[in-house]
Image 1 (cartoon, rainbow, N blue to C red):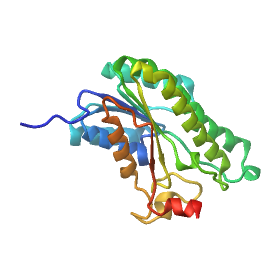
Image 2 (image 1 turned 30 degrees about the horizontal axis):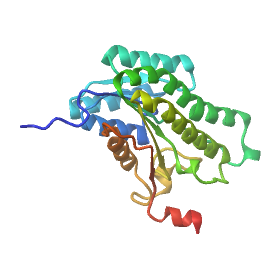
Image 3 (image 1 turned 45 degrees about the vertical axis):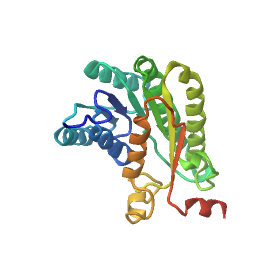
Image 4 (image 1 turned 180 degrees about the horizontal axis):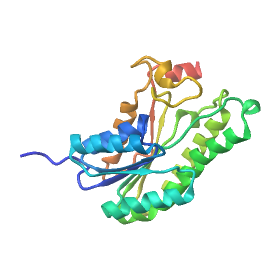
Length: 247
C-alpha cells in the first residue's frame, strides 16, 4: 500500500519563491504532499515553477505576483490563497534582499528598499496569515540568517534586519504558541543562490563550498512536519563557519 506523504492535505504559502531558497522549499514541500502557493515579483518564473511542481508531484499550485513591500498586495496574496485552497497551514516568510555595504556608502533608497522588504514584508505577511494559521493550528516559518546572530561589519543594515527577524519571530512565538501556532526561524549562513551584494553567491562559490538552497529547503521540510512541537530556531552553516567567526 502506498504511504501518504507527510504533508498531504496541507496548504503552504511561500514568499520570495521565484529562485533560491524559496523555489527549492516550494519543491520540497510539494514533494512531501503539500499544495503550494508561491509568490514573488517575477510572474513568468513563478508560473514555470508552479507548472513543474504540478507535473512532478501531482499537487495543486498557485502563482501570485506579489511585492511584499506593498501592504495591499500581501493582503491579496493571502486572500487568493484562501480562495483557492480554503485553508492555510504553513507560511514560509522567505522574501528578502541585501543591498549596499557600509553605512556611509549606502543610499537612502537602498536603505529603504532593504528595510521595507526584510522587515515590513515579514510583518505584513505575518499579520495577514496569522488568523488563518490559528484556525488550522499551522506553522509560521521565517528565513533569517546567521547575520542575525553575529555582527556583520561589511553590511550592518542587512544584519540589523535579520536581528529584527529573529526578535520578531521569537516574540510572535511567545504570543501565539498558546493558540497552537508553531513558529520557527531558520538561520543559514552563505547559501549558493542568486542572492548577494554585487557578485551573486551562486557565482562566487563552487557547488558544495557553502550551503546549498536544497539543504535549507530540507530544513524547512523537517520543521514543517512537526505536529506537536516547535523547533524554535535552527542554524545551518558550513562546518568550518563558526571557527572562522570566533577564531
